[in-house]
Amino acid sequence: MENTPSICPACGQPTSTDAIFCPHCGKQLKDAPLSTTAFTQTWIYLLSVLLPPLGLWPGIKYMKHGDPKTRQIGWIAIVLTVLSGIITIWATFAFLNVYLSTLNESLNGI
Image: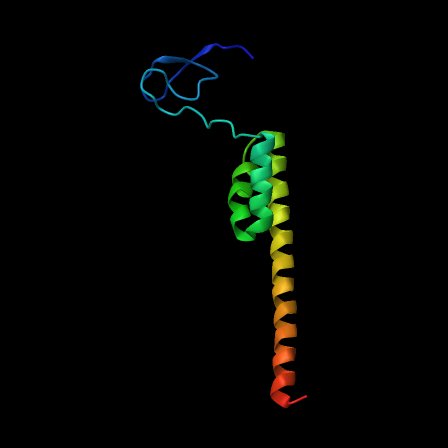
C-alpha cells in the first residue's frame, strides 16, 4: 500500500494515508486497530465465560471491526457469552430445584 499524502478534514494539512491522528491538529482520522494478541484473546474469552453478560461488550466491539481475525475474536466471545449464560441459568434452576425439594421434604416431615 502506498503512503501517499491525504488531506486532514479538520485542518486541511497533508497527512499520510496510514496515519491514525493528524500530525498537525491531532484530529482522529480513523479508528486504531484493536489488539489481537494471545493475552488479549485470553482475557476476552475468560471474561465471556466467567462473567457472561460482560463478555458481550468486547464481543460486539471486536465483531464490528473490519479485520477478519478481529471479527472472529468477537464472534467467539459472543458465542462463549451466550453458552456461559445458558449454563449459568440452567445451573441456577437446578440448584433451586434441589434446594426447594429439600425444603419441601423438611417442611412435610418426611
